Each structure stands twice: as structure tokens, then as C-alpha cells.
Length: 358
Image (cartoon, rainbow, N blue to C red; front, top):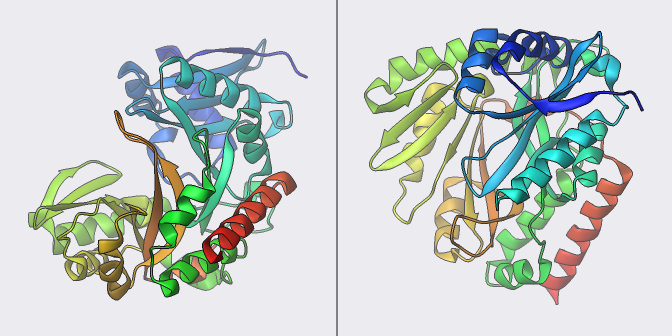
């Protein structure tokens, strides 16, 4: 084990942090992580970030804890390529999970399904894998992962959580679903282990670079739905229509929305197509069976599951529904799972299937 010091980030760390990220994750979609002033501003604003430094070398790893809600996400875990396999990711993840619990929060993480080291780090911190979330985000450069080419692809993420995973409770909810939708969800859980065939030429055209995709979607937003903009920043845009809101992540070509009983699904899909998104996602409580027919009729797919908890409420099971468009299926990156993670997922899927069918 190489000796290093873990500590909180300070303003003077901004420049070394951007150098670290540039060396470690050149394909990150949010280019602000490479801008020392933006990193400094985040630290100034109270971002909960730690880093690892070594004598005579400097900053070699970093990670962030989102503390905005009771569900605290461990994110942006970055280790310099030359310092991997030294336990840095695990130590940072363990520390942030512990600090989240000290705050009375629930640590969780969306871990990349092609990064076995990050998966093991989350396991070491006491987080358990629940399911794969296909094509959730984009990485624009896979060369550093030794895949032989510099290419964009949509990344599958593994939802890992410290919440109890009560499959019997989930099964009891799903038994109230129409059998066709229940079977579709189970099929999607299994098929997420083997993403659709990647087509490099299609992916290069759909996702040329974070900067180009950001510019393309920003331009379409201003051309097509400018009057619906509620709030906008360099990477994000909040669209408000008919009382509903859609959060657009520009360089990611994706959108997220919160559902309610009278959501206009056709209008939502129309907006997504007009601005050039590849996927829109919403998370719906499994007990809200009154919404199932509308989601299914609109073309949404029940793709993933997760336990979730809001401030002051009991944990619930949610299903992530996805609407996929604009060559989404041709842009899926491979999945590489730690054997323990894969076995845990397969075991959970099998137990859930048996519980639902009995």
C-alpha cells in the first residue's frame, strides 16, 4: 500500500484537481471539471470533496459527496491512472460513506459498469448492487480504458445503495402490475447485463464530443423551446411545460423528469425529439399502478429498480422508466462486472422472479 494523506479539498487544490481529472477521465461530459476556476467555485460554495495526496507527488485522487438531500451520492471518484490498484478508491468511498451516515444521510452511488475497481470500492464501503441502469450517461473517450480506440458510448451504471434491499416487498408490489409489464421489467433487468450492439460510426455521429453535443442541444433548445426555459446553465437546462418540468443534461443528451398523475407524455416526448435527446428517464413508485398504462402506451420501458427514500418518509421501491430515441441502442458501451457484483445481481433477479411468479 502506497502512503498517502486523505483530507478535505481547499481552494488552492483547484488547479491540481483539474490536472488530475484531465489525466484520469478525459471523456467526462461536464467540461467544467477541467476548469480550475469552476472547480474553485464549487469548493468555495461548500462542495463536500476529499482528496488524496502523496509527498513530492501531490494530488493523486479525489471524490465528492452530494449532501443536498438525505440520499447522499458518492460521486466523481477519480484516481490517477498510475495510482490505481492501491486502495485509494476504496478508502475514499469508505470515508465518504461513513461521513454521510454521520450526517444522518443514506450513502449511495451510481458506479460505472465497466470499472471493476469502482465496483469493488463501493462494495468495500458497504454498498450493495441493486440493478444495472442501461445507457444512463455518456463517456466520450474510452482510450484510457485500453479498449483500442477513442470513441464515445453510453455507459451502463450500477445502482449501489446502503438502503435495505427488501425483494419480498418489491415482489408484492409487482404482483399488482399487469403481467406483460412485470415480465418486461424482468426481461430488461437480465438484458441489461448484455447491452445492445455498439455501432462505432453511428455513435461517432450521434455523440461526437461533449462540447459538440452540448452546443447542438443548446442550439436546439433555443430554436425550439426557448419560451419554455425556466433555468439554464452551461451543462443543464430546466424546461417547464404545462406545469411539468424536464431537466435536460446537455452534453449527456439525456433528460430526467418527475411524474405526476396528469403528465402530458406525448408533449414530453415531442420536446425530447425536438431538442435531440437520446433518452428521457423518470423514477416511479412501484405502488403507483394508475400510471402504468399511460407510461406503457407512450412507449416508456420499465428498465431498472431501486430502493429510495425522501426526507421524513419511509423507503419505497421505484422503477426507472426510459424512453429511448435518436440511435440510443447503437451507442451502448460494454459491461465488465466484478464476479461478486455479477453474482449478487443475478441472484437478486432470480429471487425477484421467483417471488413474483409464486
